Image (tube, rainbow, N blue to C red):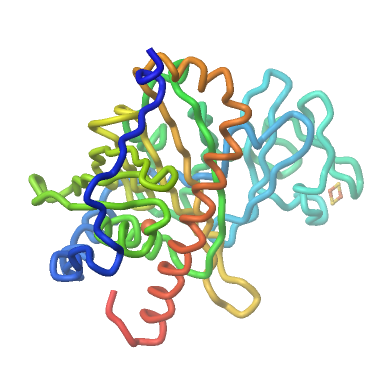
Length: 326
Ligand code: FES
Ligand SMILES: [Fe+2]
């Protein structure tokens, strides 16, 4: 039936943007700050997201600076993720510019070969591919008790999901990104092109925020859902769709500190993984169209993230200049 395939609702009695209920009395700064504090006290095991797992290939090295530490990653001959220091142990060449052939990375300055095993003063770092994201463990940076694996939120089964990973960078710290995501009240005010009719439920448990909201598709067509936000570890906020179209889907926002820029200001990468699933028959077709769907999902996230990064950057600026606590 065609209606089964189109998960849209026609919005009735639409309230204009400036006549919706202000959310600021509910979005208490102390509430958001307390949720952020609790997130920051959860263990991460010193794991940091590098980027999309699919972005690290056997063709070329992937380079990223995490909290000021240069990291290089690639796939070994068996396709396994390898990560390690990004400066060549010989004379310091940037290994992100090296060449990978048959799983072996070869430094382009003097030809030192790395196959993922410790050699010539270079040692791999613990790395983890969770099927969507690639992670590296930096014990000296995190300073926590190391964990064997990163702390991952619940996800839909890989075979039943369409995934897209979006990365953006901002001048802020991870806590500013997390604070933005722990403020669900801004959704329909700040992103009216994406969200309407947003209400935050009374917090049942203090570690999650449940929201009823409609995703705007076009005109009055919306997809109403219930979503729950939580922070399983200090640099991750996940939104689970618990009701409505896409139930079981997850949107994970991961913040990775990159280190200071040349003006000494912090840079943070936001790596957002959309892991979408649906019980609708139309979703099988959507999965087949996944290569088409991914850029669209990324574009939607891109628009939201331009605004959310502006929020996070503003928050950092207010904090760093002492104009605002946090
Ligand atoms: S700097 Fe890499 S081999 Fe010399
Ligand atoms: Fe937002």
